[in-house]
Every structure is written in structure tokens, then in C-alpha cells.
Image (tube, rainbow, N blue to C red; front, side, top):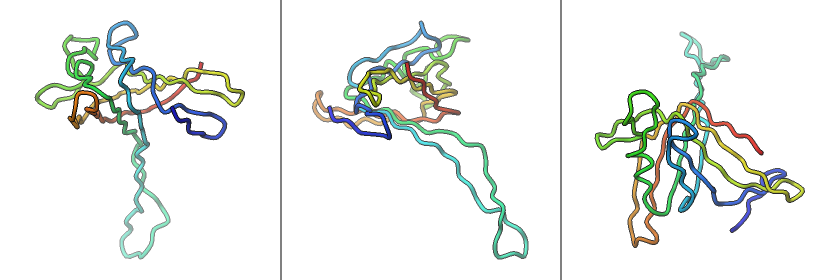
Length: 161
């Protein structure tokens, strides 16, 4: 496993757990086959259009949000298409076969990191108001099939323990 140094931390290239459900005890805990987790902040800004001017000094900024992507070696379809992710109503899946999405009420991604002293810590990413919006499969042999899930979130925060 290669390590990528980010400031004072060494972050392993492999996520240890992905938890999807509607609370800490109702959901799926994926512990193997996790290839990667990426996220990025979307915060587009545009110059305000002011009539009869060539330039604007003011910026229009809508609310920001986050996009995320999880990649798995092997299919995690049960987590996204067959796990209840909403406490109210039951059978609210992150994705359904009609292409609809439901909010994932409890969504965590965990990884092990090393601090500057080499001590291990667990970093927990919390995806708030997360939705799975896309999925793709790159199917080859069973051993190298890659499944990607992408989505949107109100916020993605992390804590270390």
C-alpha cells in the first residue's frame, strides 16, 4: 500500500469502511473491496452582470455543495439498491431501478491515517444530506470489475479519533 503525504499526515490509499443506512445500527457496513473515495467542493462564482459596464467588481456566489465518488472492486449494489437509507416509510433506497434517489440519512466513510509521530488514528468522513445520483460498472473478469457510485451532499466533514 502506498502512502500519500498530506501536510503532516500520511493517508493510506485504501478506505477501511463505508457505512450506508439510516442510523448507526440500520444499514450496510462495507469492509472489503473499497478502491477509493474522492470528494470535492462545488462553489461556482460568477461576476455580476451590471448594465452598461465592461467589468464588475462584485461576485455572485450560490450556496456550495459537495460531490463525491466511491469506487469498489466488486458490486456493492445491495448497499445502494437494497438498503433502507431513510428512517421514515421503509424501503427508501439510495438508488432504485427507475433512477430515483433518496437521501442517505447515515453515510460514513472511514480510513486509518498516521499522524506525524506515526501513531494510527481513524478518520471518519460524514456525508450530510448525501444522495447517490450515478452508478457505473466497468465489468471485466470478476476479479477486476470496478463499480463507481457518484453523488451530491450538502456537506462532507471529518473527525479523527
